Amino acid sequence: MNNILFGCNLSIFLKQRAHFCTSSSSLGSFRAKLKQVWPKLFETTLPTSKQYTLLKLLGFYSKESQSMAAGARLYTDCIKRTDDEQLGLLKALELNRKFLPRFQATALHFWLALCRLRAVGQPLDGKTRLELPVGDQVISSNKTVFSEQRSKLCRECSLLSNGAYDRFWREMARRLYEEEGLNSRQVSKYSTELEKIFYGSLLLLDESARHAMEGDQGASLREAIDKDWRSLAVDGPRKLALEQYIRSCLKELQRVPDDAVLQGTIWLRVVMPNKMDMAIGLQNLLKERK
Image (cartoon, rainbow, N blue to C red; front, side):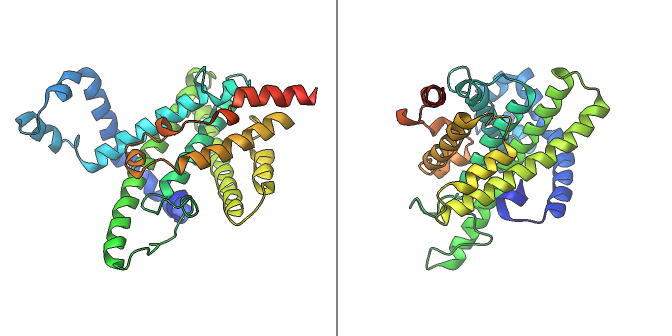
């Protein structure tokens, strides 16, 4: 997701992602399987032991490995925010757990997380928190120090988002194959189409968020929801509830500290205020419409 995170050209990003997937995904899968088969190895390993040295050579304690693990946690939390029986968005909107609503709800939470990832290293003033700098945004008199720190944070966020993104598409392909009954050729075809929808929807949300920061009163976000998120905003009340949910999430995400973001535990820190409770709010909106 470097193109959405840091403004890179889409074609260049796709080439980089292809290289990333071939070089990192297989190793990441190996690490995950090893943890499942031999979990006690990681629980009992001390930093001074030979086991630790061997595991470190295999990449288990590298910054890349830690960022990839954080990406996996981030994706898992996005799924929970979508499917959870109590806190899930689909439950709150009273929608069936069909493929397209689940796909779009997960993609929405992924975009919300990306908004916060972009702001790592920026001041907690509530204004520039969700703004994406194309380059380094100098907020310190020592430009060199800030630039180096920003570059380091950008790389960590890039690894984290790539880890979550890779898990996201592997899970979507699995659902198409196992739950929707498609064959491998159909999965490949529909995955390509879904990826186009994914990019288009997220870029449209980016544009609407940018307008919101410039003083727009909500028209752009409503238009984005109406255009690309119809599987969630199936009627007027749900459209309004979804808009309120997005705005509330963006506001709450501003308060999440950078260390929690880099650990992939963004959603664990986001507590929705009672006045924005989706289930109650939607019920009231549906009653008003009747």
